[in-house]
Amino acid sequence: MVDPVRHWQAVVLMLRVASQSYRPQASCDTDKEFPESCARDGWGIGSAPEPSIPTERADLRGKGLIPMSLVWSCNEWDPLEEVIVGNALHARFPTSDPSTRLAEFPDRPLEDIPQGPFPQRIIEETEEDLEAFIAVLTQLGITVKRPETWPHEARFSTIHWESQGFYNYCPRDILLVIGDQIIETPNVIRSRAQETFSYRTLMLDYLKSGARWYSAPRPMLLDSLFEVDLTRPTPRNHEPAFDAANVLRLGQDLIYLVSSTGNELGGNGCRPSWARLSGFTSSKMSTSAATLTRHSRPCGPA
Image 1 (tube, rainbow, N blue to C red):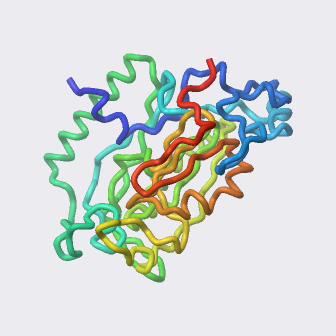
Image 2: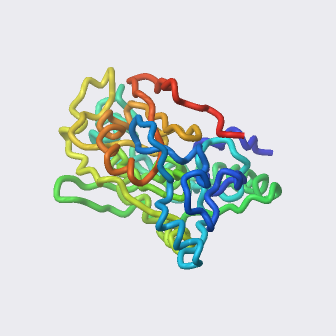
């Protein structure tokens, strides 16, 4: 029997949780009817209350013109209702390039980074474990969705670089759920640049249900982004670049980690625009761990 906790953080994207008392209802039209855990301004430090869904949008929902979103999740611990679980099919090592070295193999030269598909035995055993994990979730009444199988061996390119794919194992790396929003993140590894396409059908379904779907600025991922001291591997601040897994959701606060998969500009550069979208605050960042502000509340309101 697979241990559900062992796979939890890596393969699950939380989409809907059973915290309906926090969730804005279709009739909401005032600030007080939005959950405090999702009713602050900005992906930036702030204190002025603001609905996470604009009042005019709530009014349209109350009139039945916008459907109630299937997506709602503000933290990492509420009881689950629906998740996306990744898969390991066609998984391979990411292309040996500066982005992969920085994020995954900073202690190796490019020529020593493993290449090619993962061993079939590993893929089969992983899928077996995932199926057992899904069975546990299903028995608990949780709806489980899966991404499409993707041809990661196929090559794709920009005018600056060429790459092959990686895997679909970690949806929590490429998609960030904040309230009723799904945000595609500007991932650091080039091999992941098209990974969200395997979730496109699911994203369209959630969009039609009333969820909001955005994309962060898409990074160019030039070699210069990765020209850093590999003993302290963090992308340079040439453009925002980060994984969704660099963000920890704690009710009204977002905690951002600067690391090999997220630069400081990733946390700071998106604040002005995302402040209008998310209705969340964020903490001060550090290079090793995020530190909580005095306003942070690890638990949402009772």
